[in-house]
Image (cartoon, rainbow, N blue to C red; front, side):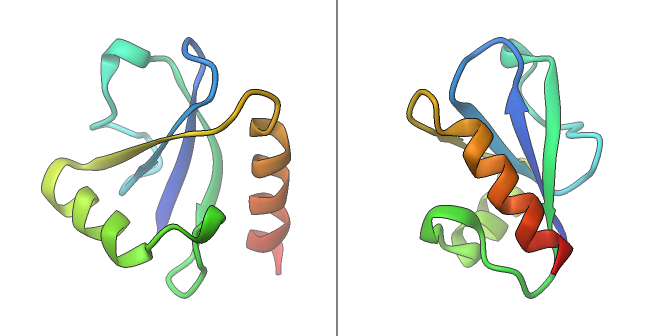
Length: 86
């Protein structure tokens, strides 16, 4: 399963994992959402998050939200993009 990573454009530090590239099930309350990366089937999520837990949340509600500390969002997105390119 590919997992798509998003960042809220209205709420600093709010991020999400979703099961589709459009983020169709992400909460509209925090829209718009910008895609910041894709985890391939065998890639580990950032911050040692449990892939199994993320996949379960996506199966249950279509997404999983997570937060970053202020100032780390760009660094996290860049790290995820580098990992996805490998």
